[in-house]
Each structure stands twice: as C-alpha cells, then as structure tokens.
Image (cartoon, rainbow over all chains, first blue to last red; front, side):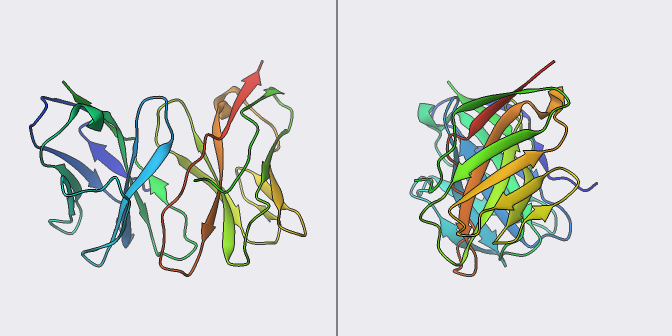
Length: 114
Length: 112
C-alpha cells in the first residue's frame, strides 16, 4: 500500500540554525500539507500546497517557514532560524484531490531544538 | 478551535465493539465528518468520513444522526492495536480550505 515517507525521523539542531524536513508524498497525490504537534498538545495545521503554490497557511506559518516541491517527488519544509519553541513532531500529509479526499499522513520527523 | 466535542477517554474490552461518540451540533450543510486516529506519537491515520449517510469500510462504521448534530464511530471488534487517540473532525468541503482542525480527541484503551 502506498504511503507517505519522511526523513529524517529525528533531527537535532541548535537554535538559530536552518533545518529542512523532507517528505515524499504518495505518488499520484496532488495536494500536500504540513502539520506539527508539540509534545502533549494538539496536531496543528501549518500549510497546504497545490500546483506549486501555497493554497492556505496558518498563523504559525510565518516568514521563518517555507515549503517547496523541488522535484516531482519531494516536498520540503524549511525553518530558517530555529527557535526552542519549534521543537515538535512535524507531519507531512498528502491527498489525491482537494475536496473531500482524505489526507494520508507520514510517520513524522521529531525536531529537537537545543 | 475544534467544532466537535468528544469524551476524553473510554475503555473497551478486547473483541467487543468500541462505540466512540462525537457531538458537532453546529455543523453546517457543506461540512463533512472525518475520523482519524493517532497511535502513540505516530502520524494520524485516516479511518472514515461521511456527509449524512452512514458509511462502512474495512476499518470501521460511521453512524451520523439524521439531524447531523452527532455521530458515532464503531470499531466492530476492537483489538489491542486499536488503542489510540481518536479524533472526530468537521471540515468544510468546497470552500478552498483543506486544513484539518484536530481537537483533543478520545483516548481509547482496549483492555485484554
């Protein structure tokens, strides 16, 4: 069964450093998403991406964040200058269409900022 | 904030049906009900969704009341691997917004 994959599974970085989280969505999916979950808290939406453009973003997704689909398979989330409060699990998701289609989530990348 | 209300926790005996309730009294006509679950710290897993008709797939059944103000997710024969946090999510379809708004969900514990 096709699945969303994410690398790395765990990333440790120092405050102020740039970090790139990588995702490979399901191959025929057209819509891509990033969510995050701070330890013990709810899963929060960050951004959705379609046709090489951001289609929606939350208040969390400020200028420190960016997303890119650099080739036909990868979808990345970049945090330019990490802060301690960026420590969280980051989940990538994809869906075939928008509309009512379900989103399939990857296993997540645990980001620890020290 | 989440538009749904779920009990914080439930227990279910292994092999029995798990019935997870969700209230969404302010749901509007173009909002679907989705159920996801999260096992430990893994990525959320899609279970099922529906608009107004009851739905069934290989994982679960979704029963939506006629007035659409509440729904129940049914896992017909719960196993220990079904222990997870279950999220009921209401989402508008067709308005250009695709984000899922997660609440705190129901922590289901399946007991041997």
